Image (tube, rainbow over all chains, first blue to last red; front, side, top):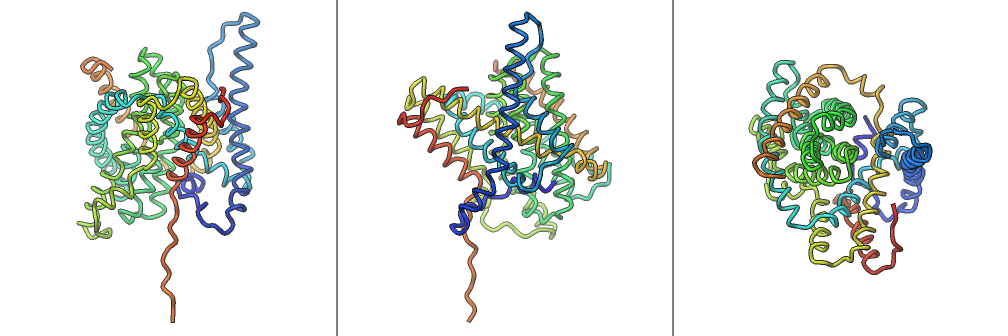
Length: 365
Length: 38
């Protein structure tokens, strides 16, 4: 899963030498993301116009799904040529830019309300899922560090959490790529299963968005799973997922301390510095834009423009989700990490669904 | 004499993403960017 791992590395745009060359190298892949994403949007609109003009009743299939499916078709048939790969790997960059811009659609009060509920639910789900994943790892006789990576990935934020935890606990490259593959495979599955379950349970947009944000691992997949349900659900899914992401540093720190206490990882020096290093900085950008929107810095048409910019950025992300998922690569990783991940994911999905139901009743989402 | 090499500070993906989003927000605020449609 080289593409997934590369995508989480810092973009090396800061080096002045060859900056232009680096940007040019990204261009083909970014254009491919745009083409795939726009094709998804075009198909959705064409079907909507055709069915309306011919008075045909047909369920609206969102551009999100079309973009992902087109991406999956390309990556699993002809494959993504090497020239396009650096640009395709920027999908996470567009995701983060999109999330920051989405901050304009939240008032700080909403963030405090829903973010507070998310934080509470994340804390409960996190404790249960970490304990359960370690139990599963023991039952399936996985290597303890691979279990730690799977637990971090499935309980916090997928690939980014695994990348953050790997050096902190001195895990092998092989373990990290196993864990990443399992998380990505399950993330792809959740795109198709979550909306179906949400509709069959008649979940409200808020409840579904909260559930997707709490249960789906990777930020890109959680955003897509939310957007597949509705625009409002997508917004809530991003907020819940962002709250979850904000806790990454604490969980990775706890694992780093645990493994170093067993003499199997380097000791953590300055804990506050460690936390800051692992903290996802785009969360601050999201809060800042939301603060500006709350203070009335933008007019209503300007807020609409910012929301649309966020949608365009997500369009590139969704195309990237499909383009970087290779079922052939996933199949090579062996069944045991996948089985542990899958059972753990089902457990997390059920626990978070129960929590969301409870929160909906008690805290009135 | 060997010169000690300090690793060049690399900006993270997050920093670039936040910068782009803030620049776009500023351009929208100053009405430099035309209305963005979906």
